[in-house]
Length: 474
Image: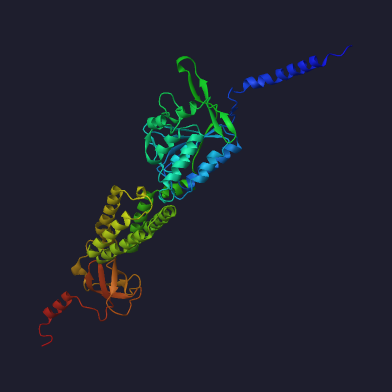
């Protein structure tokens, strides 16, 4: 059998190669982008300050999404800024991700300020929902507002936005201005994701409208498949196709994130100190003191991530001492005024950094007002009800006898007619617990006592004796 010519053999091999390669080529998008075939859509919900717990959540979710080859990571953003974090590692995590990372500022009323706006510039796709805003990005951190120069931040955001196919001038506007969803799209600061509402009204709309679009990642161009068609006829609609998984903070990190709120940390501090003071004066079973101690500990957990002004914190602590002095006296005197001034001053200057962290005026009025009311009205009532009975009057106390409930050295607690009273001895010698005592004077809510021998006699007793023996002493 004669051999086939070499040109014919070459043509046959070429035809066989084309037959094998052509189907795969036709299945690949014309743009050359790889199609995302992942384990699902990872959604991170950021609500509040970007703090260490939220930063760890973003970083860990992006890492896990790349390990499991997820379709896309979507960060829902509602953040007014960052404290106690360096946002640059988060920017690098987004930039180095082989999975598309999208940021949706929403739901309605959402905002992306400071570091949140920087992360939006770094993301391949970003949208802003109805009634939500993006910017300003300066200051980048609320606890260190002057740590980053505005010019350097502007250059970085312009470069990031441009690398993601958006307008550099739009990023420049975000640095110093707050933009609505329409303004952000018009300036090129964000993507036009939805056709009607540019930034998409809901998270579901945002995810569905990413379907079929191509974005650039560290692995190159990736074409997303995020939606499927369900229903028929008028009920026909699109919905997120892959499995959707919501990633949230665990209980411990959620608690730390909540305590990092400046308003909550401040409220816990003042309320906790007031409860401890209440426990000190009422000598109850310890419930109020325990709750107060937990509240103060929670406040200091939050303070560990916030720029606390320590002299202002000291003023708040000293104000409680001032209130305690007048509670001891049984009525509001000068120390109540001094303590109120210290509490107001400490509250106003409690936080350093950006003024956005300061205690808001209505929070200050509410907390200070309730604290003063508690100290001048509730505390004396509680102390009086704890250490006295309504049927025992001043006239019946002078000369009354009882016993010491604890050591009176020089202050302590005594039992008079079955009621507990705060007491102090007017002698240098202390009175031991269980020893008999006689009341010689009443000073507000405090009884002056001494042992029955040598103690002051009730004037009524002396008067009755003189009436019975008029010649005594003549």
